[in-house]
Each structure stands twice: as C-alpha cells, then as structure tokens.
Length: 311
Length: 294
Image (tube, rainbow over all chains, first blue to last red; front, top):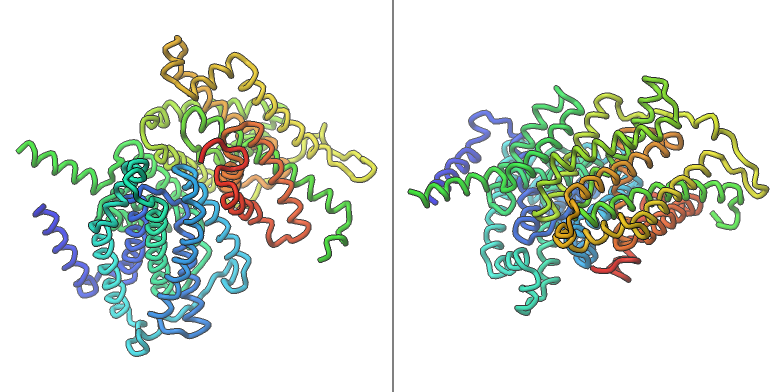
C-alpha cells in the first residue's frame, strides 16, 4: 500500500498549504466540515452496517446548540462545540435506543421519522428562530484568547479537528471494538452466538457517530455564522449518505472524497442550474447503486488490488 | 384551550380532514407493504409517485382540459406503466443485494422526480377544482359533510378493501402470497415470478398515483407533497408493521384521525404526533401493532 501513503502525504501537504496557495479557505472549511460529517456517518454504515436516514438531526441539533451558546450565552467556541456534541450524543442515545429495537430497513425508516420530528420541532421553537434560523453567530475567541474571525486561523482549527477525527475513526475501526462492529455487520446472529451484547455495541457505535456528526454541525455553524432549517432537513441526511456512497462505503478516505465532490458540485452548480441540483444528486445516487456500489475509493482499491495479484 | 370549549362542528370538521389524510396514509402504506412483501424493497419513490399522480391530474386538466373522471383512470395507468419501466430498468438488478440499496435507489429516483417538477412548476401549490358532480355538501344534521371528502374516504376504503380481497381471497392473490414466502418454489410450479414482481410494482405505483389523483382537489398540488407524506407513511408502517394488509389500513386511518384531533386540541403538535406515537410503540411493542417479526 505504498501508493496510499504517497497520496496521504500529498493531501496533507495540500491541506496545510491550502490558504497559502490561494484556495478559498471558506470553501475548504465547508468541505472539511462535511468530510467530518461523512466520516462519522461511515463509521455507522460502513463499519457497523447500520443505515441511518436521519443523520441531519444530530448535525443540525449541534449546529443550533453551538449557535445559541455562542450568540446568546456568549460561550467560548470550544465549549460551545462541546455543548453541541453533548446534545448530539444525547439525542443519538435516545434515538439509537429506540431504532435498534428494529432491524435492517426499519432502522432506516425509524431514524428518518425521528429526524423529521426534530425538524418540525426546530421549525416551531422560538429558540431556533423558526424559518429564519440563527443568523450572525460570531466565531469568538478560541480558549478566550485566539480570535477565530480570521479565516486562516479558523481554517487551521478546522483542519486540526478534521485530522483528529480521521485518525480517531481509524483507531476505533482497528481496535477490538471496531472488529466486533465489523463482525456484527457481517453476521449479526453469529456475533450474538459468540456472546457479544450486540445491541450495546450498536448503540455505542450509533452514539459515537452522532457525536462526531454533531462536531461537524457545530463547526459548520462557526464557519458560516448561521444554523438554519436546511441543517436538520432530510435532504441533508440524503446528502451525507450520497457522500459516503459515492466515495466508498467502508473505506477510510471514501467519505472525504465524496464530501469533496458533492460540496464542489453544489458550490459550482447551485447558481447555474437551480432545481436541477436535486436531479443531478438523484442521478448520482442511481448511478452509484446501479454501477459502482463500492464507491470511487472502493472501486480503485479493487482495481489496484486485482492488478497486484495478477502481476 | 379547554378541550370542552371546542365547537362540535370544528371538531368534526378536523376529524373528517384527519380521516381524509388517514385514507391517503392507508393507501400509501398498503402499496408500500405489498411492494415490500414481494420485492423486499422499501419504495422511497412512493411519495414521488403520489405527487406525480396529483400533478398528472392537474396537467391533464390544465393542458388538455381532460376532467377528473378520465384522469382517475388515465393517470394511475400511466404511472403504473412508469412503475413497470422503473422495475425493469433498475429494481430488477437489486433483488439479490442488501435491501438498503433498493431504498437508496428509489430515494435517488424520488429526488430526480421532485427536482424535475420543481424546476417546471416551482414550489408554490397548484389548485385543482373539485369535479362538478361532487361539489357541494350534504347536511347530516349534526354536521355539514362536503361531498368530495366523503367520496375520497369511500373511494380509498373501497380500493383498500379491493386490494385486500385480491390478495387474500383470490387465486392470483394466493400465488402472490406464495411467491412472497418462497419465489423459487412458485417458479418451479411454472409460474412466471419475475413478471408477477414487475406487475406488483406497477400496481403499487398505480395505487400511489390513484391516491394522488384523489388528493389533488383537497390539497395544494406541489412537487414537495411526496416527500412530506412519505416520511409520515414510513412512521405509519413502523407503527403498524408490514405483516398485515388490514392492519396497515387501520393504522393509517387511525393515525389520520389522531392527527386531526391533535390539530383541534393542540395544533402545534399536529406535525409531530405521528412520530411521537411511533416512538411510544417502539418502546412498548417493538415489532409494531400488527407486526410478525422485529
């Protein structure tokens, strides 16, 4: 796997140098936020085999929480992010405990329905600003000292968190806990027969995933300065599924690549084609499911793996 | 508000609207259950098919001047054919895979349909007039019953009962149920199961479109109506379980009524009451009210 190492080094160099070589930092930050979101989602779908169709709920709940804590209560950003993650973890615990009572396709429907419930709650609460959402959230000073209103400073903060999450997920997947998750994905009855408390492992994976999704949502609020209804809408849940599916379910780098492609597509197309964005996203879904279910990274791995064997 | 202060007329009116919505939930969850039974796929596009049914009726009227009673026949057939095409082109290739892929594919199709209609017609609603023969209302003494609403409830109940009859009481239905249990065995008896699967999806799509045509005069026809209703219908399906046809019909109607009641007593919660009930059912009876398995 030499090639992978080179790719990672090149990408790391690119990420560190990005603001210096003129890449628009807000765009890269948006990409990194969604990359965190997709990696968190992939921990659940790719390594535990659970399809949550409501991950926008945790992303959005944390986005609103952080926005409220910073804007109204004037908390410092790092504590507000922890607050957002705590709420995402808590709601993940409640939803997860209900959803794992049913298997397979029901799990997807339950997570979607409960996320829609949160959407309506956010629409009606005064706290969340209803249709307007929370606007004009300041970035504040990190640890009360370092001002994040500078895009470059904010960029390195987001990058550091992204790298931490990426390595953390690698660590989780390669740990004994991660191996048990994969065993559950491959054959749940066998994992049960080996004496594992499958429900507890699933729930823990779910809460880990929602907590990290919350981190992504909190960061997104700080980067853009707003949290709106679209953060909790089901189409956001669909987007994170698409990012993961397009990049490669169950690969480390796939969700990052998928997030990059989807964010770039949206940024470039939104003004030009209007409603056709949703048509294009739908078409990518169809093509992914029909033609390359392993995603871009998964297919590339399969291709290079095959070549190595024949050589 | 004190629940005893609500005028009877308003209460009955909201209950009727609830019953109408419940009829749509019933028809859609029935179609979902039938498709899931035979294809093993949760059809996310069901909401989009319902939306296209309503738009189909509206377009026929707006562009061609073709009225309701023709639309109620033409549109379901057209959408049924579209369903057959979808099954042949896409779904056919997914049966051996994890059912999650079917959900993702139909989600993609729903996004495509919604995007196309949103591009052409925007998100503001189109209104469709109640057909002349069903305009007006009947005075029942204790309430004024709009004729069209009564027709919607009767027509969808009739459709649901008809579907139940075909599946539970006819030879075709027996074959269908056998194919749900063991497709290979049924095929060995010389029955063309793939065609049956295709036609089932077509019928499910037609059912969704029929619900859409029935809905066109009582709601605003918008491209978003499909995704709005499908998530509620998912919750209905989780509550009822997909094991029993009459179970899903009853669940749909009951939830519509509860929603209507909530709109009178505590309007703020009417959007979420179905989801709250789903959560309660999951805690108390995880398999669903009529479910056979978890």
